[in-house]
Image 1 (cartoon, helix red, strand yellow):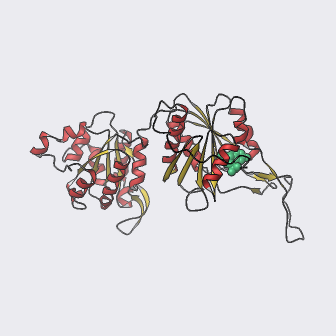
Image 2 (cartoon, helix red, strand yellow):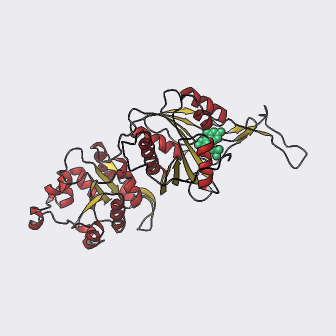
Image 3 (cartoon, helix red, strand yellow):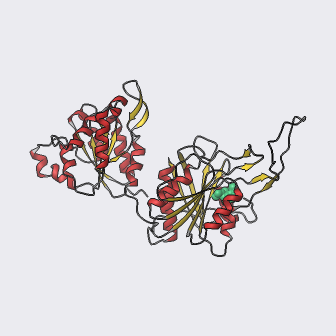
Length: 421
Ligand code: C5P
């Protein structure tokens, strides 16, 4: 369930070409469970009609500051009292300048000034890349950020003017995810989480190794989300190029063996263990002390041995935490995931397809989650958004009183006995 469920979102639309994406944005906000009211500037109505936004939001659209019919019902002060958050998308350079200065010369700028303390004001800037990087806009951006305004985007790419650069509005689905993050519940407060992420590298010699395509993005997203949800987070990570998420303790390792060591060093006192790393299943029996040279033969055989299974080791501990494993599969996703749930003694398994355009390396994923007695399918979304939903699910499994509806789901076919992972 999205944290936007039941939230009142006031969408302000200012006059940029990206306004054509706002009916889609409204639809997605409503899909996430939000109630949406729309305020448009006059310039915005030249790009898209109020009627379209009225139809998609299911509420009258407001455009006038001095409108005596509106003053009696939803005037600027009334409107400013209504929302749980305001999102201005697109936010033009002009809109940012007005907000930075504090003008109150149209309905949108006035209600932003009248907004109660603590109600988040979010902007999705959209403009030509030169307008975005102009010193005046940068100054306005900094002023707004310093005042606590949230900025979502802009992103880089082709622009309506034909140029390419930083100034595109964030895509509607991403804006919904950014907004949802503001309403995250502290469901993991008081919990301690240990998360593994990224690939491992198994050395062949001092310069070569066996590894895989894991980027670490899913594990890092989980670590970031868990910390935002109030948990103490330790991230044991294989080599990645990702920055450490805020408020996360990071331990860098290289091989599967080092990862196991770091996990066992920190597993005590940990209530939840999430094995998201793509750990090598095999390593070379011998690591050559010097760079391996070409031999006379055309082929070369590597002798490999099994690595320790970290998640299975944790599951087998006498005082084990709640254990979540991942299953990245190229075939028979559900059957393989259920085998892992069973054979590795997991409390939950999170399965995803790999090899297509999502999964490894991608910013997006789609997850199928199984536990004894239930399952949940999470449709394609950004890993950062999926991380929150998955952690809410884990929190609800640990404490069903949090959200009784969240973990109900159909009972999957039991794993065949004697199956191997
Ligand atoms: O057996 P397989 O590698 O497919 O299982 C994947 C799950 O097991 C993931 O959660 C991964 O982090 C974990 N794993 C592990 N130690 C290994 C191999 C996999 O913890 N040596």
